[in-house]
Length: 223
Length: 261
Figure (cartoon, helix red, strand yellow):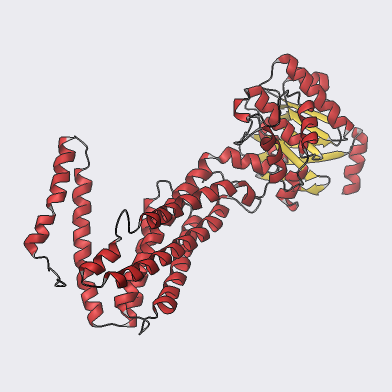
């Protein structure tokens, strides 16, 4: 079985990190077969309500499919401990989740959640640079704009250093120029660090930066 | 000086003037609460009269069976009241946790209080067993009710924060920590506040009752201090049990939030 899967992957030209087979979730998603490649930038596109967010939620195991199987690194998702999986396959929701406190608190809270060792201020400033947030660590996060909050939550996810990033419209609150800068930095960071980047985004971004594009229409993957 | 003034029927009726005054005020102010005030006054009167007769009977013919029966009735009534008082619909698992926390939390404190602190004899002595059990169960009921409301509200209104934490790799325990802590705080706070004001702002009911019935204020105060500590222990234990077991009912075995709660 593993051999066949590997053979198929080699035929497609990459190693699969996720593989979905006959996956159904309510009336929202119905995927016959889908392979997502390791160490690649994959963009998920489709109109609103098509099931894009549901797909990445399934990969993060924050929800589970009603039927079908999902494999992560050839291991069935249901056999993997959910918390361990999520520490390796981190998801960033579309609406930024900001906790009371300053920027530093909001960056570090992800590490606390994932029970990972905390980092020093220099590392935090490096992350602020990746997300292009020109703020001080002790600035209150309440006063940030919508776009800045979105970048802050992105920084929190980068700090967690997972193998897979699942990002739900990470640039939806950003203006076009900031969006270009952020996505560019994000893509080059994930390439440099050998990460798998899977993001729900709009077509324009997908056309420029993605190595694979998944089109979803009314819950189905368009071939 | 120490003669107890027995209240006659006329004197009792005279006390109802307070209810009439309240009814007139709400009527005048057009606050539509007449029905609730009337029903609650009536319920209080009937419940106390019935309880009075039952207690007279039980005190006159003490038996382990009666004491245990009354304890069971008090527990059932308290658990039913907590579930009924909660504004939102509770899952059956959460109801089970409420019942377990109430029974285990209050029983262990009641038994410790009666057998180690007061050292009653015989063990089922209703004169001590029933009022002390009543106070511990009653206060724990109020505490756990506040805790239930705060926990359910918190889990529902902060769903996105909890889910956001889970997505980053938090365990359900870490993701719900803030809500669990808040629920515990709000449940325990009234007990702590009442301890702070005790003896200065108000004289507690049990102590007042004992003094009115001729007990020396020193004995009454000793009892009051002991019972307050017992109440603190019982409320804390039931609420700790409830919040630490209760939050788990909002997650499934895949560490996902159960969406319909």
